[in-house]
Image (cartoon, rainbow, N blue to C red; front, top):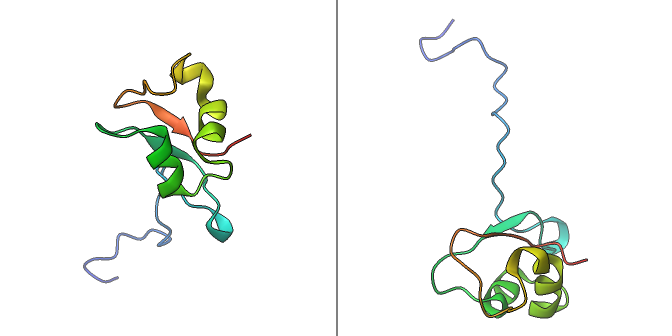
Length: 81
């Protein structure tokens, strides 16, 4: 056994993080809002089909009545419905 070998299978542990891109460039997973973000820029960056209106619709329950008011730390679903 090598000094660095811990006897495991070599398979990395599964994590819940995502880079926000899925197959064929489609967005997947979630995006955590940072200071200065807005739905338009997030939808553009993550290539959300339908743009910011679709992103808002998918997250309306979390965001509330004003799509211009998103808060740092909110976790947005990137998969438009």
